[in-house]
Image (tube, rainbow, N blue to C red; front, side, top):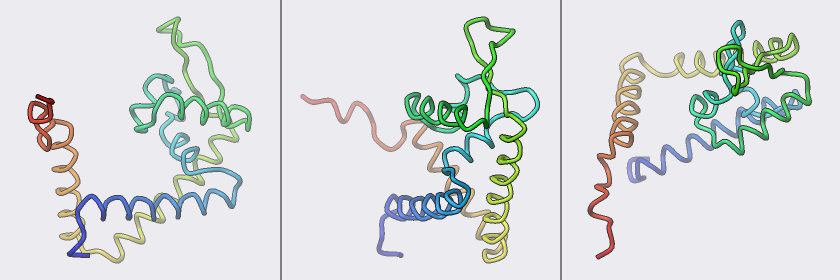
Amino acid sequence: MKDKTIDYILRTTWLAVNKMYNEEASKFDTTMATGFALLSIDPEKGTPSTSLGPKMGMEATSLSRTLKMMEEKGLITRKPNPEDGRGVLIFLTDFGREKREYSRDRVLTFNDAIKDNVSVEELTSFYKVAEVINNMISNKKIYNQKEHILK
């Protein structure tokens, strides 16, 4: 893998993880996106719908489709936000809580399997590199916007 670019390794690894989670989810007639949404919703207080997209890194249209499907399957309910009359809170149903636990178990199983096969030092380095990449992207340290203005 040393001759591959960093973005190639990130992309192919994420695609493999995505495929693995979707294969697991399909055994229970669901998707990785649904599992991720279940894990992103506060099981006690609910979660404002407007904060779910950024929390999950999902575009509004994709999130709307996912939430609509989750509501149709009886995983969530939507209720007006008492603190903001314009907003909506997303709550898990009992069925949604059950599926959330399944999703949580799958994520923890994945984490434990990786931790069993990677040293603490290697994992610490992985976290540091991921943090550097995220910070550089967030702070626009990779591509200077002024360099890309057409002259």
